[in-house]
Length: 130
Image (tube, rainbow, N blue to C red):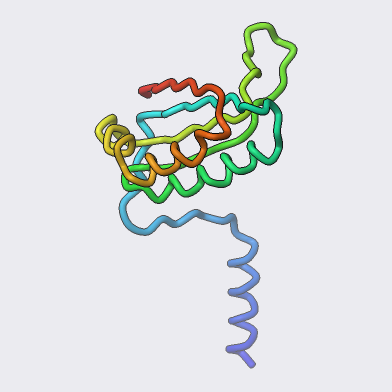
């Protein structure tokens, strides 16, 4: 019975304490490069085209050197300084500019570009160093 009470008290104390995030292994690499890609569709606003590009972009995360891929549609704004004319935006992060250069010539990236070309009217890219 004492063992049961001890276990119960221990469980209550542990569950009432604040959570602590524990990380195993080396810390994650910090994104030093943001590869921002803005896409205007041939059929502006077409939800099917937009969905295809966003869905296919997630495969880019498997390319060595890519830390993250975030993709979505533009957010409407009444602010004159905000350009919301594009249909899809991608933010692909890398630790180094060398990682970005390897990504640009990787077969999976080149395949992605060829797959979305029929849907795309214009692409604008911004590379930003942190």
